[in-house]
Length: 578
Ligand code: GLY
Image (cartoon, rainbow, N blue to C red):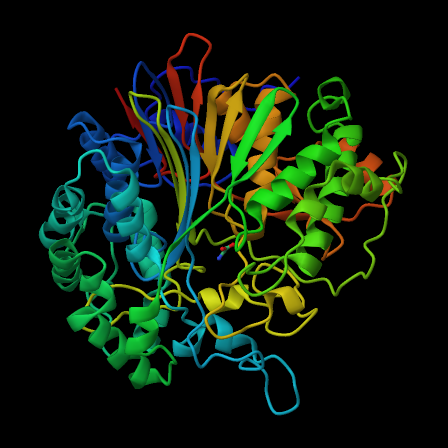
């Protein structure tokens, strides 16, 4: 059973309580009162929103209280995140939404960014064919054609109950125009990135000011408010055409970027068929390509199903070993076979075939690590910035939404569209700039994920909904780059196999293996010293990282109540419900 690392919080737990965990985790910040009441574990009767910022979660709750469904709440929450969580909430990025309606039907929405029409496979290489690393991560060439606004409009058109687009935009517009009070975490982050904002922009206001930001300072975003008003008035055309589009293109021309008016006008979000699979008596609904999340998650669950993980014990050597070995194999497949299925024949059925996956584990040795086929250079995987944001919603009718959206790295490319007030993504780094050369997350790729005009870059975002015995059971997802998939896996296994409550599962320390580099990366508190010694004895290399993905989840309890849990790794994660 899970050792008692954390105090259990069955009901409302206030900020003061989770700051206890921060101290436990040796994050030695002075406890200061934040301007918001933050609740990280909440049980309510009817409806729940868990998001990365309390103001955004409250917006979602208000929309639900006004009669909106889970899709309405997710749209409004995400627009609010674009204002109050500018490091990742966005209109200049992209994302994925997985929906399960109360009648059991499911849907998957792809609004991932696309490469501009003039992008080409060698665009990040120098004359000698070497990757110029900074080009795909910083500056105008790193920007993919944003998908977020198109995605929200498509979700609204198909699934909104409120049928009132203006109402979904109103809270975000108000927060941008009137301003809002910064949390300590956002103030710190804005200060940390100040120089990068100044370097990337002729005018970095309002994100840069004289002196330093402090918790409780008001951030007003008048340009963003006007951009959101154009989206309110014209829908997606208020972003992809007219003034906003012209400002984006002017921004591209300022820095040698590739996005044109035509790229913007041609952008389309797409409905996809979700990846659906079984694990024991659970049915898992997740995101298909261009995310790797659903396929890799289902591969892992299928490979692990025959192992009695619960009886092995949570983070025992046996458990960690078999999970890491399954992860090694699934991430190797990710690198070779996964990319945008509109451009590359991703062998989805073969990758999910139980016979193939049984074969994949044929060489699993319960006593020793299988070296990764090609041991890559020891790259440090970039999981310490939390550049993506996830929202989980369940409404009173039982509709559920799991939505993850991203700018890629914190504040994306750091480029603010001048006069329009929002950050542009640097999602192009999620392509494989050159076969075998790792991206920011240490992920390598091949032909399947090579840069191509109009192509969507491969993602690890894993918005997921799980049924138990055919009823809604769990809604979850996370930011955290390549560690998202393994965090979703471990949270799910926590409740299905290790007998944890949802808060125990979300807050439990985590580990991760992604084939290359050939190492188990661990949060400091993950895997005790003795077990680490046993794993090293089996041939595993272990590396510590500060923290991994930040899960936001809602679980339906046996009595029908909803348990919403934010991640105690992020002081601003908040659950709101009624
Ligand atoms: N940019 C991170 C991801 O999509 O996986």
